[in-house]
Amino acid sequence: MKSTIVRAALAVLAVALVPAAGHAQSWPAKPVRLVVPFTAGGSTDTVARIMAEKLSPRLGQPVIVENKAGAGGSVGSDFVAKSPADGYTLLVGTSSTMAIAPHLYTKLPYSPLRDLTPVTLLGTADIIVVVNATVPVKTIPELLAYAKANPGKLTFASGGNGSISHLLGEYFKSMAGVDLLHVPYKGDAQMVTDLIGGQVSMAFGTAVAFLPHIRSGKVVPLAVTNPRRSTTQPQWPTVSESGVPGYEAVQWFGIAAPTGTPKEVVGRLSEELRAILALPDVRARFTELGFDVVGNRPEEFGEFLRAEDAKWGRIAKIAGTKLD
Image (tube, rainbow, N blue to C red; front, side):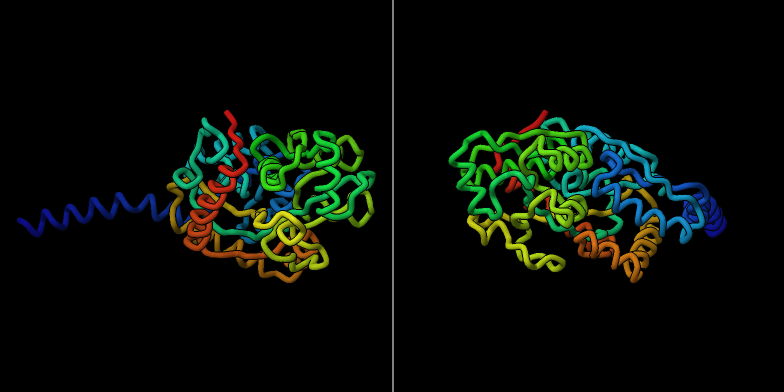
């Protein structure tokens, strides 16, 4: 009798497990959305479109890049965090949305560490301090001298309140003891346009966004915010070695899914994305954009996220910036 009951219980359990296993095996059975929480044309959007183009044929389904901008990336990130955990809605996360936002926004509607599952860290991008070509400075020491002689005259652009470019500007003001006026935009694309046009004086942004305009001579690079000199542009000094000791940060991009996404789906995604990042043409393209490719496993990305969360908590405290 006991054995009959045990067999019956095991049979029920087996039936209950079939849908979950079947879901993982059949994924993907429809298009996958890659949500960019910023406007089209910016650095995150550029990274997403490179990856989506390569990921579609590997999955056998369209991978659609969808821009959901707003609130420094919080709108799109919250959308993904609250989406079904089925592997069909993914986030292209950044330092801003997955490490900085929790320490800036007092009413952030999602928790990156709680509501998002790490898939892979795509890579890191150089952040460059740049000025419009008409600003009479070529180095960080010259910038500091000019800013102190002209308090409040220099404006720094950002991709929006709460973005990494915003926090880096406030962090710079605090550590360097200079007075700069913040001008927020709704994404990197408009920020870059107005910097080139001279509507704003300077910005802290990725090499992905600024390299073409540096090459054309429309903006001038002063330094990188990396802890060490860039591997792709070693001729530029760091901010720390140029007169603001201890100032350092990098931008990074990664893929995340809603918490609860089946491990088999997360594992398959991570494997495919890492294979794409190993392709010579993809690596060459990212190198051109000042991007150091990483590509790691979900658990490694998770460890990285926890370390970044702690680091940006310290930076936000120094900058003293809080947003509703």
